[in-house]
Length: 354
Ligand code: X2X
Image 1 (cartoon, rainbow, N blue to C red):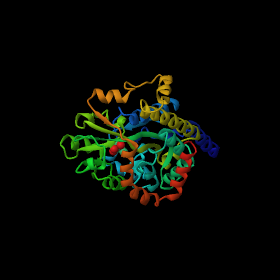
Image 2: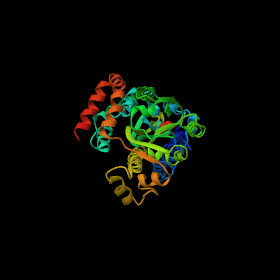
Image 3: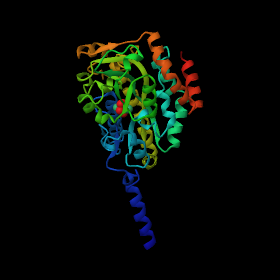
Image 4: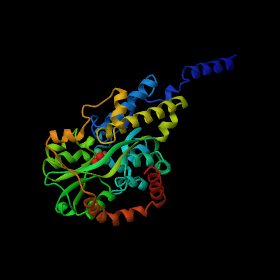
């Protein structure tokens, strides 16, 4: 009789906690580097909102912008999500590239940019075999990847002059992310790169500690970089995807049903983020996609907007681009040899859509 009561009590307890609620946290922290107002931030917020709605509040993700969770040290993010100090992230490939060397693929100078359709080329990588190989490399290092989103193609801004030739880089102090490949590339092209966190960059620009920086338009415009930097080189030198991701232990704590919801939400949010990152810059896909969602942002024509805020946008001729690419080539060759199979596969993936 006593045994029966114990079993009954145990069953009741199980019944009450069947959706594994007890194991869930009241809040899951999601790390991003820039402000919520960027495409990156909007995509991350959309993910959190979709997950909360579709799990009826069971999974409550809160987006922490401006690198709050890493106290500005954005290149520590990978370690923190791996060890569980951070639950979720929507993080740039660049910030994780010191820990996952394969992520440097996207930052190879003029690699994706030199393709006839750079956006199609990017999609061919992230949706292809090379993208899957990179995802595996990240997961082997201890972080689960849910989807590829996008920060965007990175353009260069500065306060001094229009850039047409490597000569124009002479003496120019440029803030770059704390990544060896960026330092190598900009040194090779004749500039004076300085590794710095994004959280310190605006002050550095304001005080003239650096003359310029490189970031997607979508990421530097909301923080008004144009107030300090009048010139933008529109050269798409490298591309920067984001990775929607989660700590594997946290992931395992979710029910199969919630995992499916989260995975689907990440895919949808990543696509939304990609559209926001590309609107006004691609062949019109992003505009149509966001219009259909009824989520067109305020700015849909970046070149008009940049002119309005007083920026001088410089484009290079193919010959001028080639002069920069030639200087960067030894760096690209050296880095190619660090993960040749994935590079070869990315070349093949891009060739298939060219
Ligand atoms: O630091 C940057 O430049 C930023 C915001 O783009 C990244 O986090 C890679």
